[in-house]
Amino acid sequence: MNGGDFLESKAITLPPFHVVGYKIEADIKEFESGLGKSIYHSLFERKDEIQNKKNENVILMQVSKQGDVPLDIIGHAVGESKYVTYTDQGLESELSRSYDYIYGQWIRETGNEPKDYDFEIWDERYKPESLENEIDLFVALK
Image (cartoon, rainbow, N blue to C red):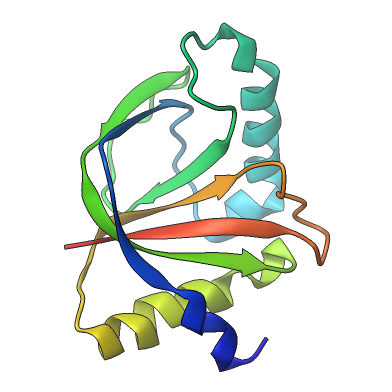
């Protein structure tokens, strides 16, 4: 991937939305050692229990604040916010390059400031071990 690919990053505003799922506390190593896939499969198996779904996309929301960790399904309301969004293509194991670019170069060059969370959308294009994998990244901006 060369730097030109990142030109597709753009700032957008999303209206409020609501997510339901699992809340976990883990570092990157724990998450990538299989915890992420395990949670993904658990949520997918229980998707029919969730009423009034707008879609079946899985969202990985990463928040920098620590808190209590409920073990079962929880709900979370996300307020309207501005985001920088970018579609990462390729192996999930190389996703950190996109985050490094957004939190580093993009933030610096555009004069924006990140909030305390970001999220990824895993839809039908999510194939973590394939070069055809696509993940939409959203970093909340102040």
